[in-house]
Every structure is written in C-alpha cells, then in structure tokens.
Length: 324
Image (tube, rainbow, N blue to C red):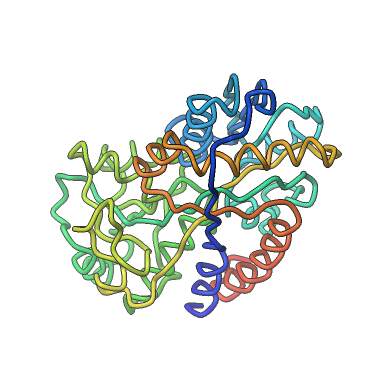
C-alpha cells in the first residue's frame, strides 16, 4: 500500500512548470469564466475555484468570474450537469476524488466523459484536532486508537473509501495500526467536516492542508501532521506525518479543471493559456501562499495521461484495503 500511495504522491505532484512574463495583451484575455463547484462552501473545491478566479480577475487575465456550488452525489450531480448542458463557458473544478469515486461507481461518469483542461495545484493532506482537544500529537491519537478503535471517530469531506478516508488509512497503517478498523465519518464537504470537528462529533479530521491552515491561524484547530515529504515553509512548526510517527505517509492531492465534452481545441487552448499565465502573477502568489498550495501545471493530453496512471495506481490501493 505504501509503495502505491508514494507512487501516487509522486505522480500527483507532477512537474512544476515555471512561467515567465505577464499575460500578453488584454485583447487575449477571457471575457468571463463560470466556475462550477461540485461541493458546498468552505471545502477544498470551493477554495480552489474561488482562489483561481480571484487571481485570474485581479491580474486582468479574465474580465469576470462567477461561481456556482452544486453539491450532490459525491460530485456526480455537477459532472452530470456539465455533460448535459455542454456549456463551453464553464470550468468545473475537481481533484483526486473524481478518479476514486468513478472507481467506486459513486457516479457512472469518469474524467473521460469531460474535456480535461489542466491540473493546477497540489494540496497536501493533514490530520487535525479541535484546539481544545486533549490530543496534542499524532502519537496520542494513535495510542487512543490502539486502545479502542471504536472510540476514535475520524471524519473527512469525502465518502467512505474516498480520498480523506484513504489518507486516514495510510496514516494509521504507517503508524503501525490496522487501517481497516478506522471509524470514518463522511461529510459532504470540507466545511461540514470541519464543523463536525469543532462540535466534537469527531475526534480528528483528515482534510486538505490548505483548508486546515487558516483555521489553525485563527486558533481553532491544531494540525497534528501534514503528508508532505518535508516541512512546509508556510507552517514550519507542523511536523510531517513521517516525523510524527507515521513513517512513509506521504500524499498530495491534485486539483484542476475540466470543461464540457465536445469543447473545441481552440477553446481548450484558451483556458489553458489563461491558467498557465496566472502562475507568473503576484495575485496568484498571494492566493497560493495564503492557502499553502503547491504549484503544478499539466494540461491537455498530458493531464489525461496522468489521470489514467493515477486511476490504475489508486485502484490497486483501494483493492488492497478492501474499498473495491
């Protein structure tokens, strides 16, 4: 399992592409982009779409950005909507769960039914607890789990067997426990999962580091560990999961954008050029650093090839853990 998730982490953190120069000429800017978000407010998809839209509009690459949250079916409702409407002016944000949930048959579609535009960022996972929790380290969480797994509910903003569940299983297995005994509580979106943590409904939360860092800054949660290979510049006091006792627990979740099926090559190239140009702007640097994201860029056919490889890797992992 560790070998597979490490491979997924390496693959998911595909080559960072450095861009240079400003976006050339307002006549080449997009007039409008409508972002379709498959989950509720406050989750990772929501933050990615709105942060990307903020950078694109403030830098002048896109004149206007609008947003639509469409929860339901583990993201399947939004996917079906985009396929049905074939709206060429819409970009749907998604991430690793589109691969996981199609494997699970949560919805009948896959990335093959859409037009992959580009992978744009990576977000490490984190294990967090309520600020007032008596658990202050990953080792304490693991010890509590070993004593009685049924007394340690760990939540996430994805369905059972989804990415947050897989990350939880990875961390617990890497810490020397049985990951199949994890009492996982699924929520429809990251914001709802965080609310469950703050209310005491769950003892810990598996979530994106970008989602956790802001609440940690506000003094509402403690981050026990992050699934990066090395400590992150934006939070140097946060140990990696390997350092905290879950040796080899490394994972990064890609996030990116898809368009409707049948999109023309010219339209796809326009979106890709706009997203690529975004990386060289100070507006993007502000959004990226605020959220603790990792720059990545993989477009078109390369993005599709990556998705196919990840599908094979994660499918193998899920079978090993009994999720398929």
